[in-house]
Image (cartoon, rainbow over all chains, first blue to last red; front, side):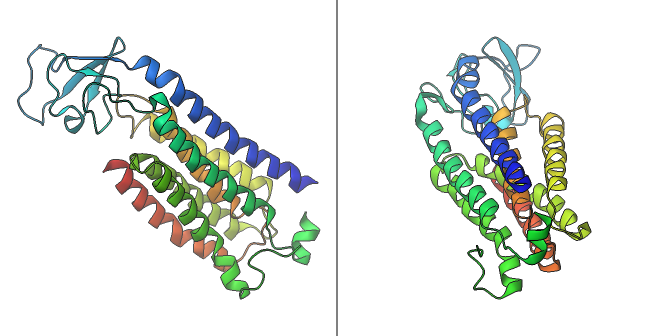
Length: 133
Length: 142
C-alpha cells in the first residue's frame, strides 16, 4: 500500500510535468511571441556580422537572440517563433502552435508515461523487497 | 509476480532497466518530435542528472529505496530549474525545456524506486548518466 502511494506520487509528478509542458506550449508561448524583429543593437545600428548581439522584440518584449538564431533576419521580419529558437525562418513558422509539434510532443510523452508505468509496476519481488514494501 | 526481466541472469536484470528506459524514451522524443532535437536533448540531460542521483541513492541504500528517491527527484528538479534559470537561460526561462528535463529525471529515478540496491544497478546508472548528459547536451545545443 505504501508503495502504491509512492507510485501514485511518481505518476502524478510525470502527469503534472507533461500537462504543464503541454498547456504552456499550447497557450503562453505562441500567444506571447508573435512580433517582429525591431532592433539589433542598442544604438539602432544593424549588425553586419554574425558575431554581433541581436535584439529581437517579440510580443512587446525585447530579447537577446543568439547570432545563429537571428542570422539572416531582415529588419521588420515577422516572427512567431521565440527568438532564441535556432531555426527562425520567417513568416508562417511556429514553434508549437497549430497543434503540429504539440501532437508530436504528446506522442513522446505517451512513450515516457508507458515506460514509467512499466518501471514502477514490474519490480522484482524478492523477499527483501516484499518485506520493505 | 515476477518482473519481466526475471528470466535474465540476475545481474543483467539489474543492469538493463536504466539503459533500456533511457533509450526507449529518448527514441520516443526523437521519433515523435524529430524536428525538435532540443526536446530530446533536455529530456536526456534531465535523465542523466537523475541517473547520477539515482546511482548515489542506490549506493548508499541498504534497503530498497522508496521515499528517499522522491526526495532525490525534488533535488534533481530544483537543480535543473536553477541551471535553466542561470547558466542555460537563453533569453528566458523556457518552461517546456524545464518540464522535459524534469520528466527525464523522473524516469531515471523511477528505475531505482523500490528495487533492491545493488552494485550492478548503481554501476549501470553511473554509466548511463554521462552518456545521457553528453548526448543531451549535443542535441540541445546543436
